Image 1 (cartoon, helix red, strand yellow):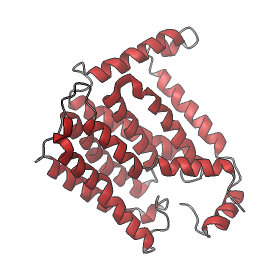
Image 2 (cartoon, one colour):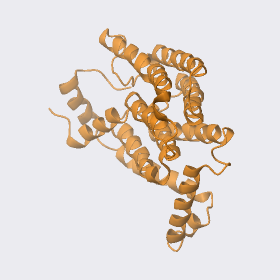
Image 3 (cartoon, one colour):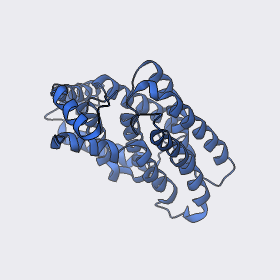
Amino acid sequence: MKLPGILKFARMVSYVLDGSVLALPIFIAVCFYDPAGGIGMKILPAFLVTYLFIAAIPYSFILYMYKTGKISDLQIPRRKERLIPLLIINICVIAGFIALLFLNSSHLLRTVYLIYLSALPLISIITVFYKISFHASYITMFSFIYLMVFGKWAIFTLLLIPLVGWSRVRLKRHTTGQVLLGISVVTAVSIAVFTLNGFLWTGYWAVKEVKHLIKSGSYYLSPGLPVYGSNNPLIVILIIMLFYLIFDRNQNFSLADYEVARGAEYGSQTPG
């Protein structure tokens, strides 16, 4: 029995927008895109170090664990299997940051790396007690970073956040609460790190573009949604409620049918 088309799509979203995949476009953009043309190839060593320690080494280790049967799935859905991979990932991130201090790197690159350095240990601690969604965390980080790199042109990446969240809930890998927690934690960490490093209060060009775009959008939407145009915090609650309703509705599919289909195609392992 083959997986239904909607589940295949959800699996594809989860694999294509996994943290191991997103690391490469994140650091290519941060390292080599500069509107002023002032970075160039001098930052290549920093790019190689960051990608090596953020993605290449830790995810090679995860692949090794999967091949040797120490974990049941490359995406590590079972919380009890996450501890050793997370330990390796955090060690690599710390080692990469130390190496980055000795290399020629941009202020933006160091700031982005600090988001990884701050968010990953926090998420790792949470996952010991609660199965927070790493997918939701990584796609949120990706979106925030792309907004800082490309400004208003990256606003579409925000749509990827609910898409990834939907896929994790649709596959029964996570609950709505686990997805929303992943989004919330990385949002808080990203805002804090970007603020402390001066991006949100010094008139950084990308921030100005995004603020202008949001302000323009709120002006046109305010007749139909006054709370949005007034920048009221209730809009945040409204968005969260909307996400919850979308995700919660999709949790009502037949898990039994999914397990039968998954067992037929991938063996009898049960998702965590």
